[in-house]
Amino acid sequence: MQQIVQPKLIIHGGAGSCLKGKGGADAVRQSLHRVVQEIYALLLAGENASSAVVKGCQLLEDDPRFNAGTGSVLQSDGHIRMSAALMDGTRQRFSGIINVSRVKNPILLAQTLQEGDDRVLSDYGAAELLRELQLPPYDPTTELRLQEWMLERKGDFNRAMAGVVAERELVTESNAGRGTVGVVALDSQGQLAAATSTGGKGFERIGRVSDSAMPAGNYASSDAAISCTGIGEDIIDECLAARIVVRVTDGLPLGQAFERSFLEAHRNQRDFGAIGIDAHGTIAWGKTSEVLLAAYHNGQTIADTLNADLGMQTAVG
Ligand code: ASP
Image (cartoon, rainbow, N blue to C red):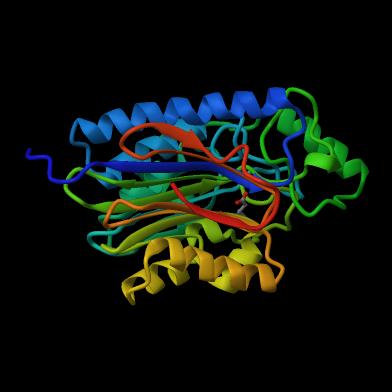
């Protein structure tokens, strides 16, 4: 296969408030860089954007540090319900799974649904799909997430969301945040894709639907691809991923599309972050939350956003 375009890759492991200690940040950085390295190598070897973002999501889902797949947060009733979406930019085709339980990699279900007529399934339909695919039942609960839930139950679930990443010690109010994962890639054929996977906010009411399996939280066209993380309701209210993509389609450079969208979000006191790539290979990220846990490969080096200033910021990588 002829390499026409230099591949680009950006991934995130959530957005939220400050990481508790340097130890936490270093471990997250290592996890993110490892995934970037692995997936970028696949892109260089000719993997297409859609399967690369799925593989990246799968690696992040398997890392208990992040709130997706293994290590997902528990909802108010103590159950884990996960959501994931894949959007193929070339086909401009979205597929997603909402509130699925007892599966190792929700993103693989979203990938399976890309080819179907019914491309977004929730609860009962998701369980039926698991049965049809004969996937073995899997319990993604980790001891740490269980302890976190029990602690919250004592406090009557007063916190808005669970911890940004699972740290060795229990997460506390000071580092409350999230840890959803997302991957955006441009492959060597110039194709874009975005994938996002989450355990939700944590402690939410039964049936609450995350933005991660909506075009508000995960969207791509042949012009740009975006994955979001943060308070899902804020992301939905801004329709963030689709908003940024449409701005690029209408002619705004990706960096400016991020800048404008995050200025509006800041004005509206939203709490979230987003990552993206456009068809020219520009990488961008933005946040209104204190931190965004993102890392990227720009063709030359791997870099990350972990030391970015607190608060609202957008940048081109
Ligand atoms: N956006 C996710 C949700 O609201 C949470 C996150 O990004 O951490 O379900």
